Image (cartoon, rainbow, N blue to C red; front, side, top):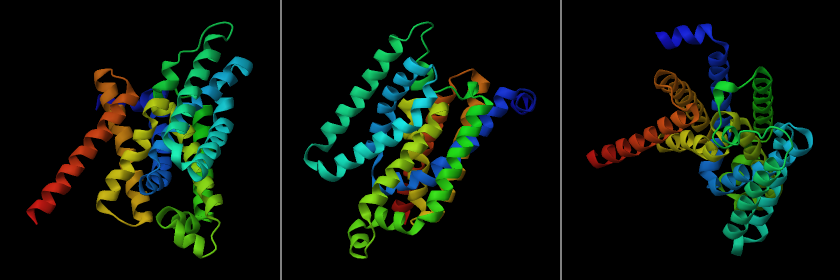
Length: 273
């Protein structure tokens, strides 16, 4: 009851709750693609490398968010091309981009004149400090994700489940694969204020991974992943408020524990059958 009263009274909790809803929508839309296509490693490369663009933006313009979206899209295309044309050294190249991006961000942030920005807020997020402008940005990104997926649902589905068959049917697989990675990059930017760059892949993948245990088609998976993301964000916010713990970490722990329980429950059910 105290949490509900505080949620009604304090604007920062309201912003956090609304941010959780918007983040859950992004998780539900794009998470299933990441899980089915098994591109969580590439999504992680995009997320961690993003700190480089944010650091450069902070150094020149004092607003790290200005560099987040263009950097994410550029990184998505680079990593996608590496996957398509550099398969023999794919993991090494992505790891190199990953580490170089983070190192670049650290250097530029450290060399910015004046007060040094708190990197913890970007690495681990702080949904309690989300402002109204960030909520509008998250809403805009959600609308972009919904529009693109609605327009290109069938080719994206074909590229995700069977790219070879899609290519035989005349679908431009390379274009839609890079488009999918760009959508993943936008989702990373969407989730960043909530859990930060370090934990963003867990929030992106875990709701969809749980949903995939129980449904096999894409649309029900999206719906269930969205509902799970909403539950994780809300319950994590409640635990954070109750025990004064970091909100992003609480959300991820709730999601991780639910995934473990879901795996165990499914295994017990099959064993019983």
